[in-house]
Image (cartoon, rainbow, N blue to C red; front, side):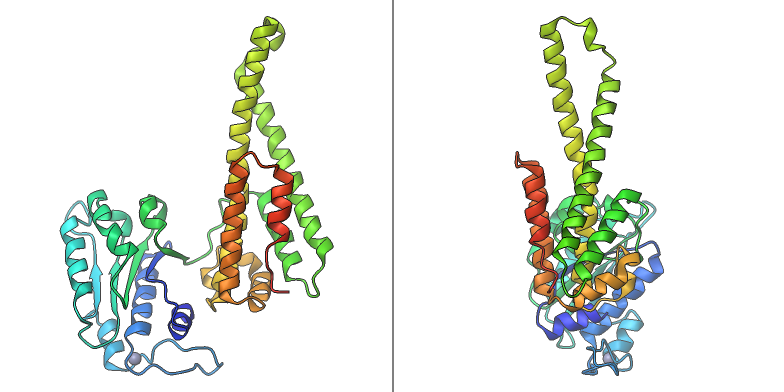
Length: 332
Ligand SMILES: [Zn+2]
């Protein structure tokens, strides 16, 4: 909960978090711990190791949160046989968070199983999620974050409990590891960054080749059987299909960069290893994060997102990647 504690200390608390994980009890404990951090009435200034501490765990505020009885911590859960969160539940939550805090601090709203929000309820909630009243923090918990509406997800700061990296390919992992190692090197070695760039371009080259082969196979027509004009048209169609598929797969490949930069950003805010998407890289991630204030880590993430967007246009790929990667700030 150091992330939250530090953010409060710096006055930069995000107002909506999506906390994802595989264990419902762990999600609820995390939410309760965040609520305690916000509602503790006797917060210790510093932990023994000098980092901002979370909550005292002993005061009335902490006790009420633990018992699920704090008037400023509102929990909304799915109800009934269908286990859906209805619009009426969301309205009640909105009413409660707009009341004055009963104990004079923050108001915390927790939606457990946020993927069970009925679409109408989710839509009704968007405005509050976008502009919650001051001193309100909303925590959405989910075991299936991918089932949430994109409009909800994009308005929350995401925290993942437990790194889940099964979705990444060998080539992706090898590349991001090389980049992370290059980034964490001190003194900086530009050559190492160029090698990571070279590795990326190689991996993308292999993807392009695979895509072109599979598109050609899937077309099932032998161009030799066609009239020249038809052949040309088929070729143009195949090229377009291959290009679209290649872009999709390139984007998928580069997602691992966003995940890693997100890890660096979380680590720069003092969050523990358990929230990293790529725990194998924790050491390098930590080293980079130590050299990087959170706002610069966040700028990196935004810059990488822009590079991915840029790649969707007709920009020259190698140049866009080179500029994008070499411009990342690793705190040297
Ligand atoms: Zn306390």
